[in-house]
Length: 130
Image (cartoon, rainbow, N blue to C red):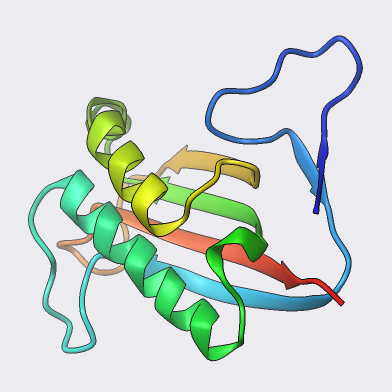
């Protein structure tokens, strides 16, 4: 994976502006903070984000991919302020489960998610090197 940073641009904090990669592509649908039985990990954005990230790691593993193969990540959150307030908790979970911040990342506030209790949904694209 090659991080794309135009000359003179400052290094973004917590993500990359772009990523180039070649290999087998893996697409993970939006993961929310519940387990395989549909039970939510908690009622906070931080607890749900941790479980959603764990769910992503579990799906990647089935494809033979690992977190370091993630090239793109999109977060959908129902409350931008809660997301920002949860940065420290999310950061700990992210470092423990995903590791690096090299992927291209987007976060979008949405009015609601399909599952009423869901506060965050995260989708990723990974590329397993050839």
